[in-house]
Amino acid sequence: MRRPLSALVLGLLVVTLIAPGGSPPASRAQGVDVYINVTGGGAKKLNIAIPEFSVVAGTDAGGVAKLLATVAGQDLAFSQLFSVVAATGSIPPNDPAALRQSWTEFAAAGAHAGVHGLLAIRGARLEAEMRLYDLTTPEQKLIGTKTFEMPSDQARRLAHKIADEIALQFTGERGIADTKIAYVVGPRGAKEIMVTDYDGFGPRPVTRNGSINLMPVWSPDARSLAYLSYKNGYPDLFRAFPFERRPEQTLAAFIGINSSPAWSPDGRSLALTLSKDGNPEIYVLILATGVFRRLTRHAGIDTDPTWSPTGREIAFVSDRAGSPSVFVMDPEGANQRQLTTGGYHTQPRWSPKGDTIAFTSRQVTHDLWAISPDGSNVRRLTAGPGDNQGSSWAPNGRHLAFQSNRLGAWHIYAMLADGSEQTPVTRSPGEQTSPSWSSRLP
Image 1 (spheres, one colour):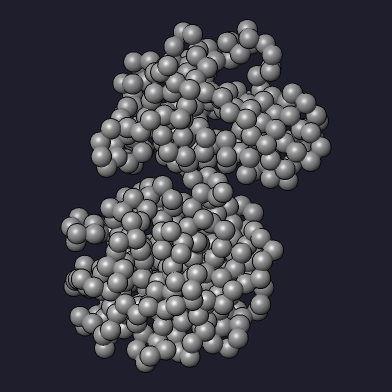
Image 2 (cartoon, rainbow, N blue to C red):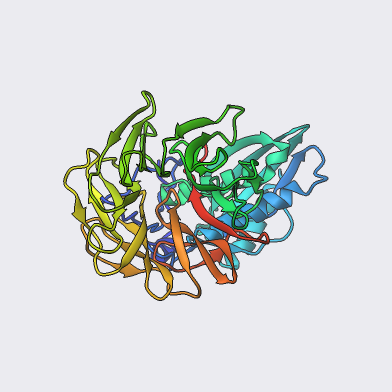
């Protein structure tokens, strides 16, 4: 049975998910029938109240109940689809009258929906229940519930998962809070790979070899990273497993250049640049067999491949036309065509939605641009300050991470796909570059 929010909210929100193919997807919620327009810039937002969670078991000495509400609210605000109505204190867990009064007050303050969170602290485990209410109707309907369990040292991740579930309820697509960003940190001559939450919290090292480690790229299942390292004295490619006690794998260690890894959408293949036969060319490595297949054969330099989400095309950079430009070919290397012209264009990154390829353009400085795969709709995403380059798509195709030196040192930033809402991700001293945004974690 569907339980739509009231006509008031329907008037505020775009109620159809504008997606390729037209009609909105089936809701996974028990009745939620409202969809925010996730393809827009978030001009119309749903106002949601998330009071501090109510502790129903255990002692909350660490302030987890407040952290869950705060972090989940920040995640929803980052999406640019929600505005969080300020809240203080918690709602009693078993007091219908108090709950009704609280929701009435939040509705008066402009909230369209409310989250009543319940938290049980059981030793080293956290158990949380999210109850989602429609505040636009007199009945204040309960429109969705879900329970979560997480180790007590992963409270922030618990909040991210709750925020992603709320996003799912209202958009039909899970949020991106429970994702990671890999990046490179360190000065020239000593660079290590790091992994952090999407919002820059909890950075941890992946490499500690004291060498130069570059170009981290997440596998589609977010369980491993391909990266380039000079740890053996040469630019070779490796595969690390940041969350598992598995030994690293060597992906490519030929004489010459081994660089620019790019996972196929199914995770079974890796496109990469090799110069083992003389000139830098694009190859595909079949991981199960270790077989390398050459895709390009040209006197120019071919490098930096990126797969379309269908796996049916690969974009790459070539200087065969005189200066670096973005080209597109099929996975066998045929049907090569030039996509960008008239400039110095590098670092193509194909959107998970398939409708956009972001790239870096060098004029006086470097900035990020975007183009449709058919060569139309070329548009600029950044216009300084400083250099902006090296983009990486979030799994929702609405956000991009990129590196910028706008404040002097290189740091990782995030923005919406139209270039708006630019915000810093990394905050540590030193240089942070080459972001790679993971898919949603398992």
